[in-house]
Image (cartoon, rainbow, N blue to C red):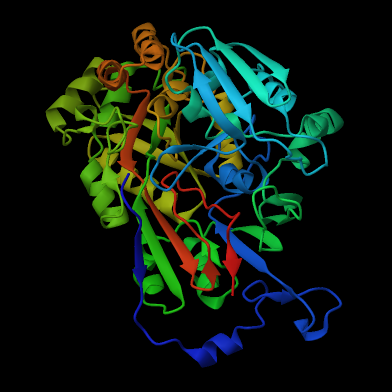
Length: 515
């Protein structure tokens, strides 16, 4: 993976303005209740701005990047990704794989407790993996090859797969590997989503939908002292407002700086910009079960009418790259499948004619209510107009956007993916028949077959060939239009220390400190 680029300002610190901001809530260390002036004890509070509301605190039900930002502070995972993009053990201490690639034996760390005081052990891991296989689980695509899970003793988990599955450990670096308290699930049932309990560095306090999620430090965290007393994730759908709050000290970190605001943040002596190409992609689904996109040619016409290079230039000024696949540079499956052709009016006209709409057609494109996606929608709309394709933009709250994806209540829907290190996790659940994130609802047996073979193939070169084959089929069917690969653009106060960038874009909080 590429190394982090940290851009630091050389301007002089404006001490007077900072003193004036010292009283802003959360900008400085706040005194504990009952401590006058904070002279006896200081409560360290870190406020993180997210550009959308996290819909779910339950890893099994989660499909949002914003969920993951919070969940990674509440839960530990069996494995994680390090700053170099390599897989490292967390709750697992080590693992072994059988010669046939079908049996994984995990040895777990000992002496760890959940926030509710119950023990983390092999039975808890067994419970979580089996829960992830449930009918309503969003993780079942990643875990469906599990045949059985056994816990021969408190620190050993044996997982038998139906067939070899190359991405298995990689899947356990994300939500499939997040371990929730079995006792809490039993206690709260369907309400667990509002009472999340993990083993992570922070303990859930409350969530006020559309406003904030508050966590407090885990006083007994197993992996070293947590130095921040309170962590607040605050929702700022307006990126400019988030930057203003970062500059004032009301926020300490923001998950995404709008491109137009990057020079402002760079020029502030109290802030830094972390800009790094990540593993994700952005684009939109076309619903293959609803007119007009039940017609393959009309899906292709829309996909071919989009000038990816212009989208990136207009919206991102170099802080993104054009895409035509879910595989970014550095991914095992990255290659020619990511190349794109410039729009060709004759080709698009021919596709419209084959689709029975030679004079064009109209559809509704649902986009989330933040400025970046609104601008994205407007650019796509203008590109399609010249081919008599009318995209009517529907602005939808982010959580509703995901609900509409789940229930199929859309014609076209703009949602991207933050990316994972294994190619399977960037494509399988989104395009294979019946998988939970296949919002476009395409069903192509040849595509399913290629991707099932790719996840069972252990030879990297052969896997790459299978992904190339799958992308040829996917481009022909156009169930999802890949437009660009993301860059992480994180804003950070220089009062914060202990921050380490990881190429999955998640803000790790366990080691954070604040002056």
